Amino acid sequence: MYLKLLHSSTRLHPRAWDFVQLTRLDKPIGILLLLWPTLMALWIAGKGAPSVANVVIFSLGVILMRSAGCVINDFADRNFDGHVQRTRERPLASGRVSPREAAIAFAALVAVSFVLVLLTNLPTILLSFGALAIAALYPFMKRYTYYPQVVLGAAFSWGIPMAFTAETGSVPAEAWLLFCFNVLWTVAYDTYYAMADREDDLKIGVKSTAILFGDADRAIIAILQGLALFCLVLAAARFELGFPFYFGLLLAAGCFVWQNRLSATRDRQLCFAAFLHNHWAGLAIFAGTVLHYLLA
Image (cartoon, rainbow, N blue to C red):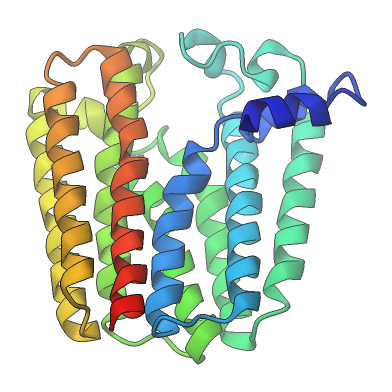
């Protein structure tokens, strides 16, 4: 249904679908993986009743900044994506969108995102510059370090302190436990993503945690997921979250076990499926957060 709506909305312009694919709006998994922890932080910061305005601002901001991140990522990888089986048909790699058009699209998305941030408060506005810097830096890291997933984790987690400043004007120390959870979780699921491209990345010289971890990849992912859940247990104690939240963590743990079993053969399609499945883990944790406050 979502894809049908996108297709129907792009019929007015013959090139509209190229830009939908450039921003990955046709593949909303990235939006969801970014949205669930951001909303979780908003709910906790607002003690179960976050500002409606902030929920709208951050939800739209997630869509816009994830789209901007995809554009700058493809811009940075335009000379690499054509050599990777999964990405060779992307608009920049295939020449359907020019680098200049991509740069303009990135600038426009960032500008609209900044307008949204201006509707919050000064601490949130100041933090937004850090979000932009990390988002712009991430795509280039795979050339220099085997830890680009850590930079992505920071980019995907930056909305958490911003959610607290938007709701309360400051970031309490315990909020950084949520930040650490999301960095660890992002590194874990993006390693599954990188495992799907590992053979191609080795050929073209691109670095990733999947290459760094080697045969220990699934074991390290399991450790990272365990540490991520442990951070949430510590955060739950600090924020006095109850049984529904812990039940959400239990469901997420079940998702992680299933992903580990799914990726046992390291087949690229199954590794990608394990990556996609993390949406359900994030949804379980967010749902547990909401239920805690509804039942409190």
